[in-house]
Amino acid sequence: MASRFKRWSQWFAPRRASVPEGPWLWLSGCTVGAAAMYLLDPVSGTRRRAFLRDKGIRFWNDSTARLEKRGRDLRQRIQGATIEASKRHTPEEVSDERLVKRVRAAIGRHVTASHVIEVAAQDGRVILRGPVLAHEVPKLLTAARGVRGVKDLHNALEVHERPDIPALSGARGAS
Image (cartoon, rainbow, N blue to C red; front, side, top):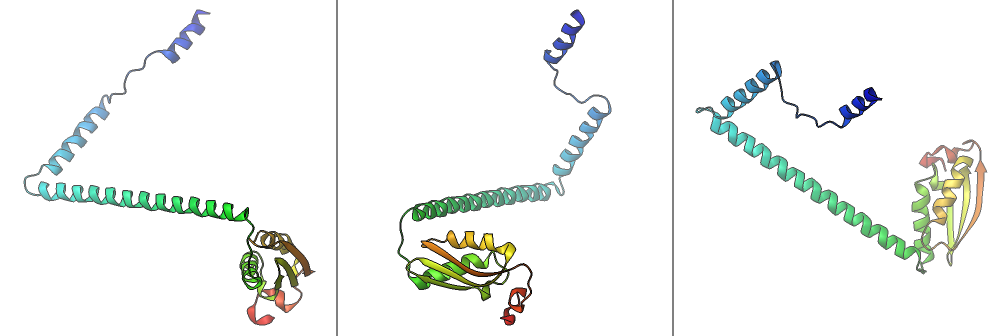
């Protein structure tokens, strides 16, 4: 039992501060001496100290500018998210033309050949027509439903497993 107590006491015993000993003490002394000699040199020391001071000031200014930029970015992101969240829960009357543009922009990020998908809207009801690849349908429908102003979504898409028609290859001139 006593040997177990000794091991636990070693874990909780106060520790000494780590002080360089032997060759490390000598190396530390040499480094401090060389740095002092380099900076306090009567011929070039003034220039070297000014150089270090300028580098320090530049580092400080760059750091504060980066922090200000990140803070501004974060503030604007939070503000945008707050506005989007509040607009989602308030009914909004959107013109059919604007709704079509919003849906086109939303689905364009999720579909390879968005130019062949026809989008029509009437009083908040959106109709999607045209060929689309099967693996893109879920993302396309989710994106279209998530657009502000869409009240109902009608899926009249032609689903294809492979890009077996030229329009689905993604080339603009193919349609």
